[in-house]
Length: 64
Image (cartoon, rainbow, N blue to C red; front, side, top):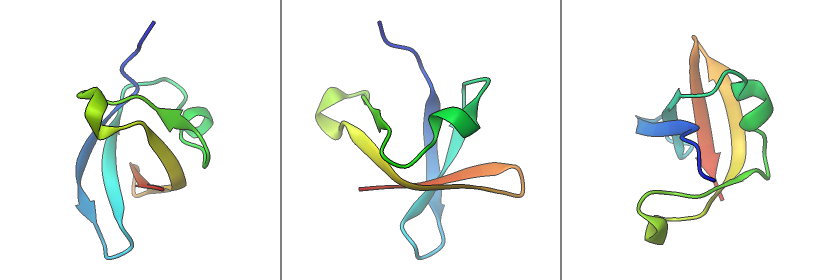
């Protein structure tokens, strides 16, 4: 079973982070380093979170 957790947005800063639009009720529990997510299209992933932080109400993630 697959569930939509987030949608990747635009790049943020020079650290390789991207903004994400969260589609989960517990982003703080889902967006943790080491967590792996499938992608659509599948050839683009899977993506593994390297860093995550909340900045002015927007989640910023970087991937390995």
